[in-house]
Length: 171
View 1 (cartoon, rainbow, N blue to C red):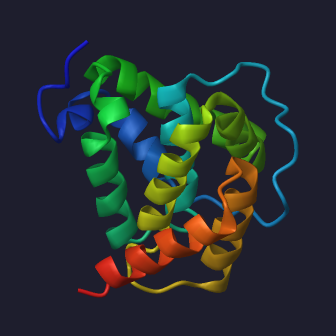
View 2 (view 1 turned 45 degrees about the vertical axis):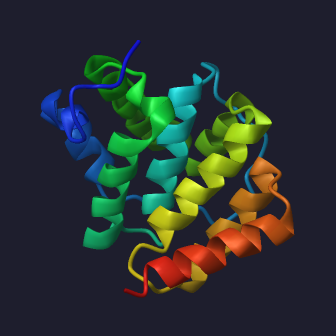
């Protein structure tokens, strides 16, 4: 399947799905437990889940994080293979599972669904969304650390990714 119709194509779906992803969430405090999700996530759903949880790492999605979330979901090559209806369905599913099961279970399921090379990509995506405002709150720092462990990203690589993201977001 080819790329979607354009960078903002996922917004053309159901408004409820978009609103659900922008609803304030509480951030993940504890280490991610093994997934309790009955329904496994597909790779696109797992990427959306990581991005969604990253946007709410400090308990609320700020304007910069919202814009970066939109940017990444529209530009991510793995997600461009999805038609807009599939991406909207993934967004709705992620929002529902986060609400019903919690962010920790959602992230654990996402990590299980991603092959190792995509875990590094997901970590980079999450770091960029979480740090979009150029600041790193304590909750965001803790989230990034727990996510690195959950996704099994090497600490040295994770540090380099965070450093580059912080430099990028200073401008």
